[in-house]
Image (cartoon, rainbow, N blue to C red):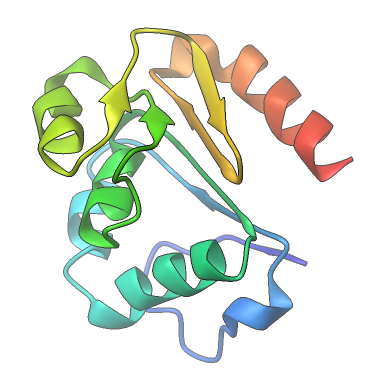
Length: 121
């Protein structure tokens, strides 16, 4: 099951998710203000589920504290946030590191979607 939400994840159980795909834009800044959403990202990651984001979606990964020592990318303006959270940041259209897939901008959506489909099989 793949869940998509832009608000509080009422009734969403991390054990029911194969993947969590975090949108870009300013939605992640609002999403990370809700502890339950941050906890959901952390729980999906801890159980080895796919956590993916594009653009500013990396803010949720920062807030979930899942980036230490991991290879990632994001929109360039949050690079410092990701590096300060312990990530190794790369300016590439898609970066995959284990159960994390990250991408920079909507221009990279084709490569991001291909990476997601390959990982989800």
